Length: 88
Image (cartoon, rainbow, N blue to C red; front, side, top):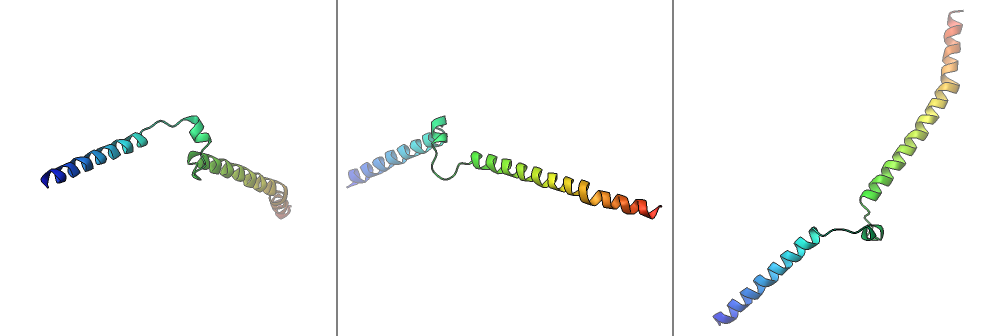
């Protein structure tokens, strides 16, 4: 009976060690360019972040351009006319 228990313990130890080795290999394996480009998991990681940054920059440029045009064409000339009218 003790031989069977010892063999079971040895086999479970071997299985645990092999699983640990596989986990370590999977964590530290190199990723090829093809794997990154063909990624279909739904989480692109850096690509999503880069795309978000680009969209944010483009939207900011559009809003700032619109504000600049609004101030230069509508708001500042009317303020300048009112100030000139006060002193004339």
